[in-house]
Length: 244
Image (cartoon, rainbow, N blue to C red; front, side, top):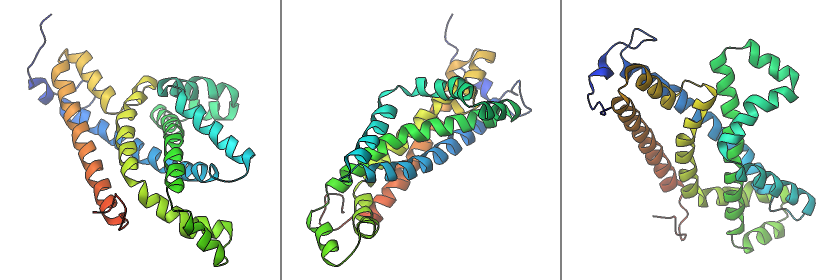
């Protein structure tokens, strides 16, 4: 069967709402953006905590953090989302009951949020650890000489500088997370890719559906890139490579 290259179907009314297909797919971008923002926020909080504890001298704590990183970093994302959606609820009955009773889209969103947040946290944790390791050894020693406690040294000296150093790799993680949200279609979340797929399956115009979805992904990625570029410029440390 020849590929239909026509874009006219984008302006036809969708089968699920009164909006045209291009609007129907556009609304899917709301789920994509919302999921990316929520998961990135969760990943940042957990990643900073795990990455910081990874640098402590306590071998037990450091080992637990390393195990966390290796666990979430080495299991494919699609396998993790299936585990969170199909396996974890069986192990936690109250959570299973909540998934059954709540709106399916909300249940799917929460599952994807937890899964992608934890998956990305393992990658951010390693970047935080690397950022801390790149800080000159004299700074923590100077903080200690001034009478700062370990917690004060990390919160007031080490982490503020480390976080500014790792903004460039965090940009890549943010953009990767936007693309990874497409995995959520496997559990039914009506995000951008799933809605484009629905249009293709119902109208047999996959070219138009995925062309529009591709354009939306590019726009979202460019916005993220520009936003993180602005953050990088504002947070650059004079004297370091990241400074401009």
